[in-house]
Length: 598
Image (tube, rainbow, N blue to C red):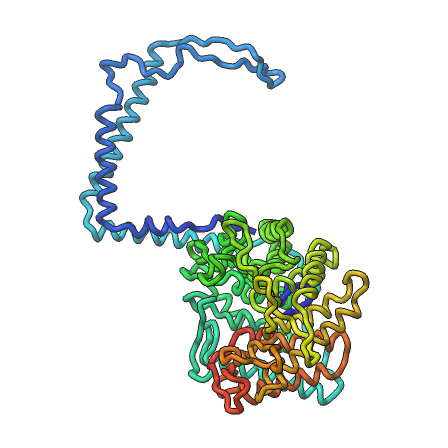
């Protein structure tokens, strides 16, 4: 789930342009041909040229004239006064026989010279050693790389910056609130400083091993995900020295021309979202430039039969694919449905509509499709345009698709009525088929699987409490009060999932079966990885109701994170929230700095 910093600009932090054609894999394959194959190609070219010279060069003994069609040429008559063609034509006969012969001889000589030059070049190639041929191949490679780098540095159009949204609100008057806010800021410093020491430039941090960490969503390269992801939090907290350190690293080291396969969704929300947020907050041009460079690298992912993007794309080759586990090669709703905010802003900032067109095409396609029970399944095949497995959830695989519909409407100053209608239709179906109340009186959001409701709710789905409250204003039939109440009920359920653990931190998912309510049953669901969704819902409820309980619940979570997740080298997730002596997973997620602490 993603968390907004600067509403209504983005679903994550803020909220289409193609600066050049994508690179294609066969270019690189050509540069990697074996020397033996290259020699065979040269020899083939030599034989072909010899064959052509023998059979096709003109023979003056047989061809007294090199027929250029000059003897009988039909020329359309043009009225010089009007510049229009006259349907009549007139015939030109060859004017001077001697002049024609000279022209023919000149053409023959040029053809012979070109052939002889090509033959000499082929002979020279055959004389070269393997090492010389390899050196030439490497030289061509270097030229291609240099051309790619030059293309990536192409400046983007200037665009006016909206009023900057910085940290100008001052300190709270209440001493207790001021102390709590300073404590959260100190936690951010602890997380950032240790990353700065032990993981700088890596995507994430292993705070116990004190070294860099990465996962397959970022590919094999060190792209500094934590740096980019945390920029707006640093700025909002007034940590401007740390912000400038991050900016310098981005200016000097952030390179997207790497041979690395990344998640389109994750790179969009963490990198493009993070860069755009930093740009809007600071006005520094480098962030916009880098965002556009990266977006260009993601565009090849949309090259599918339906325009629904692949889940993964290689930043260098542009080759895309989907996760092997995702319903027979399907794309995932929460991934291709969570591009809209950032891509619309890219079009706004650059003046190029390509990004906007890409995401609007996705929306138009979804509008045309039938939906079982009005629900959006989590899987859509990008080749066939058909739904995959009928599995619908507001948690993982579905969550931020609904969030982005609502925020697209908010971002448009409530003029994107199409997005609002899609959101309202989806929420009505979700409320009808997925939302239930347990025997103990807890409202939860289950998952729909092939016509059956699974009474399980994920931590990721807990964001929906805040979403319902955010979308209350503007709801159909003046149901604002209903959605405020529904959001509060979801917040209470998610608080219970925290309160019923030993650590007062929530599990990854929890059941509502029989006597078991808001509790994880399987060991594989008992972990907490520094996620923000529950705290995010508390934040929205506080903003809309100013009920102090939500601040209290947020502070409870902060104290639990400080007590059980803080280690000397940063913050770590825990493997079992029901154990009073937790084992750490030794990963400081980038979203902990980007969302949870924010």
